[in-house]
Length: 238
Image (cartoon, rainbow, N blue to C red; front, side):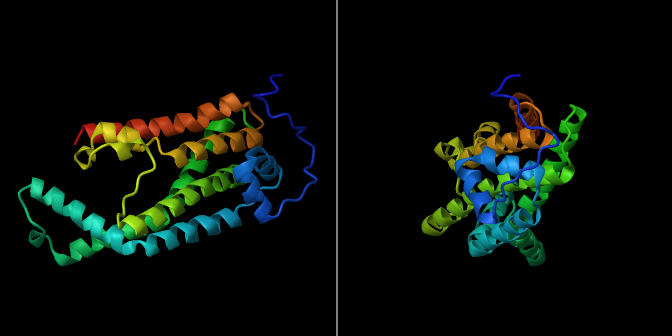
């Protein structure tokens, strides 16, 4: 057995160490294997549910004015390209679109977490994984706290720069005129916190389903790559 790639755990062995919520979060950042090994045997879903729902909602509300302004400006740019102006759009439509962006920033991550958990769990089971869906949901949920951490950093930068759309990816080096292009779409997907989340998520799925790290990485990063391909195809059709 490859000791580096296999999760060497006895299926009937119980995890005797009890980790508090604070310890689970702490080790998630400094020793993710310890948190994921624990969650594989004692999955916890309430804490990530609350953190993801309320955490992203708080950050979105903190910068709601910036999000609304950014969405309005984006709409205006699209209208100019079509030879129209903002006055051509009913005020109710503008309000719906701008506040829709705020609501999306609040609940989008929660929906994304659930869908990603379902997809990786199903694929892991197809490839002879043995974990439960609750354990998969727990592992991916805790890994998603890294995304929440990244959003917190971006929110602070947003408030300092008064810019709603802060990037922590190579796309930051591209000009605004590149927004929406395939190059911009690809480079923005290489977000440092997204990659970190994927690595930790792969560790979690390996422990949950008792599969090799190589296989779990293929599942997690493979799903991410497919999502990027769809985004690129959409960008190319614009």
